[in-house]
Image (cartoon, rainbow, N blue to C red):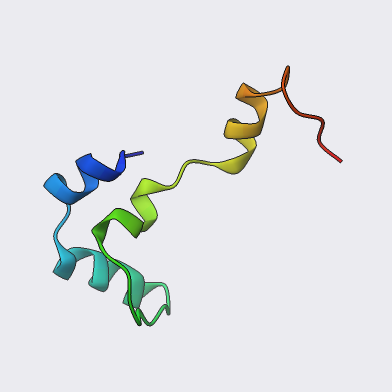
Length: 56
């Protein structure tokens, strides 16, 4: 997973657009800092915060 700044430096808009099109996604807006590679797995994020949150 990339941080937002890393995404801006490492990803190209063309590659991200092609990756999304292969998955059937039409991009209407957003920048490289919103690319799929930027997002962490939500289960891992919650697990890392287990002492701070209660999952319902």
